[in-house]
Length: 95
Image 1 (cartoon, rainbow, N blue to C red):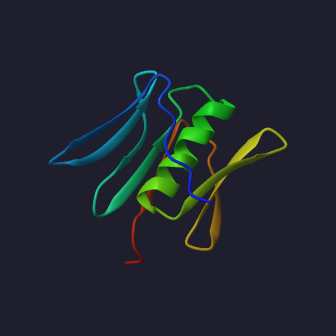
Image 2: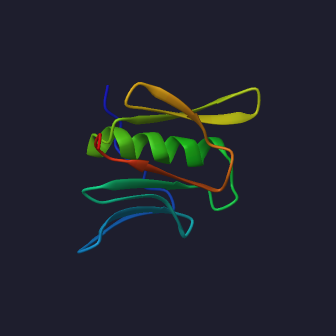
């Protein structure tokens, strides 16, 4: 089931440099043809994760953010990586 990005305090901005999904002023997901950048803006909330995952679903970006024992992780292209900082950049396609 594909989820559309929620609208509450959320907007999608598209420009020549790529697309950003902003939640409360933070670009929680930015992507272009080469990279995907995830940002928490210091807010590790359920809604931040939800907006990230909705963006992945709506734009077919192929990642999933989840939390286990208070730690965030991202599954991308079959690999799980720690999301332990405020941002994480993924390569959109295999090099």
